[in-house]
Length: 375
Image (cartoon, rainbow, N blue to C red):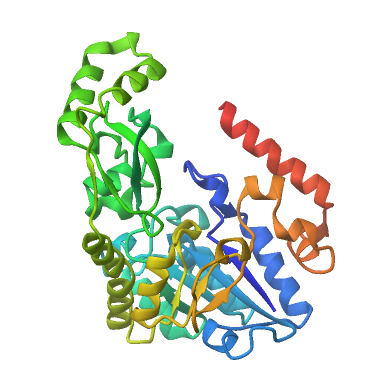
């Protein structure tokens, strides 16, 4: 059985820093046609867990809960009689009770496709509509999808870089669902020291000394065009003996992990009136402590790859191993479907009904990466 990971559909040309997470609409539709024409059955994870090795079945999963899952992915899946699972973070669910237009409205001549809103995150009304349809199943992606500092080594200085757009999530968590469509760089003071960081559910959080943070911001404000980041970071690191910061306690880390795992499960179950039994770790970030709390919370299975499972005590927690179908970068380097000529390579190479070679496809994706970096 193949379990496939997607994120976004139809946003590969949008003005979005993470547009590399998206596959084109025509690729996705032809991919769905391939599944139907070759008699594959798509199933939810509650069926998968009964027989993970069943033949000719596919689990389609979508991470993060992007708005385009409602606008594009859901109508296409519904059109072809397929099913998908969406992993969502409650902190990223948008406000609002209005269900936004999607591709079905375009087909019914209610709106032109050019007028569809694509960028953003799902709201509860859309999640409930998809869950009730039987086409989509909603599961947990943890509560926050955050990153945290994990060491006292300073590696960068905040100057509004898109790669650090998770920092505003920490300072203004209620604005998280809107980060794609609004400039949130001013939510964080320029000059903030950035320490080594990783996924929230993989680390013990390091908490910088407030005096060091204040010193860094003040010193940065004086430099202007003379700012040399390498020298500035080096100078700040020499201040760590004077302002060492601290790490969260065992109790605080456990409380944070419990919030991420148990609270997300509780909220989703309450809002959607359904069981939530599966956890998808954001960015594949977990450790033994977070796995233990996932088991305590009642999850039956978690996403992971084999390399990250060495030495972990999983007990009865089953593993959902997925093949990525998203990243341009992954496609150009090591994506699984590039390596499997019998299934994944062919089904994803259909574009307007024709097949392109894996080499041409990788070349196209790589050129998009280079162009994106240049411009």
